Length: 392
Ligand code: SF4
Image (cartoon, rainbow, N blue to C red; front, side):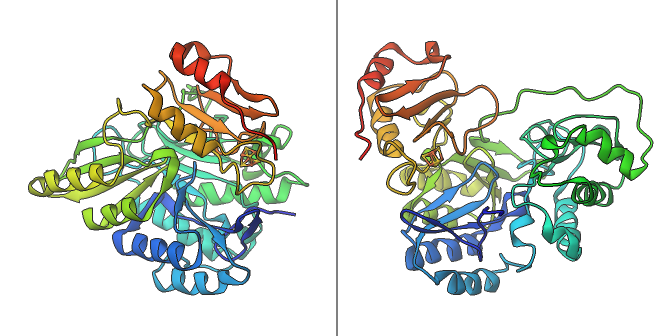
């Protein structure tokens, strides 16, 4: 059974229902964020989680609260399809079309992909974990564990990577090709959840499409980016954007209100950050002060940037520790590690970012720090080794 949560099919966790709200391309308006914040306050525990797929989660929902939540989200335009809501998994380059670095502006393409996905009844049968990414050519999201990734290699042509592999599939019609790949996966799968689980999946899908494959050069794997855009970003149109990291990926009501007040067009990133876009230069000082004053992180050197954590206790029954509380304690103790750190309440490591990450994993005997712990300042490593949480 596919237990991946959605906004209507919630997951029952130890702290209540968990609803996941898909945001194709990470995009939402300030008004839509207001709706989510109000729903979190009125129906859940008040906080809003940012996921590694640039979606939002509300926790602590009472039994049956998903009906009211669904109505609120639909009213705000955040639930365009009840049948396809769990398969609208589309990550896109957060700064596409706004800041230099890409080969194409994929904003409209993401909207078309989402609409076309929801218009095909069979694709409601995709697993809730099945992921599309659309990368405008700067290689920031193509490698985020996508089943179907479109990576622009010229302004008009995208390489379609399947399960992270480039088998030479190229297209000028990303929507049609990406959805054809998803349909081929549904035909070829047995009990598989992801393209990478299918034996020779990438090649079999390309063959199923009858596509002409380019002999090369193929796109090589890149290390994923692990940080959201932070601070001031110059837009191509003369306006500016401001990127902020959300501490531990949990947005509280005060932080959310600061984002709502800052702008109208927001982009959630897959690195637990938010970009406030399309601002005139004259309003930037006030926005920076508002976001920083609410506790959002705007400078890559700030402790907390690059630190993520799973749900842990008390929300997850498998958790051996309250990892968010412990991570917050460690943050208060000193400088950040030299690479992203992910805290997990057990060995499953949910929500772990892709790429090089320092793992801090709760065990029955305290925390186990990953093999790359040389990057952790000595004092912090000692504190961490001493930290204990009783299993129950
Ligand atoms: S890593 Fe373990 S403790 Fe954390 S959310 Fe996943 S299952 Fe729960």
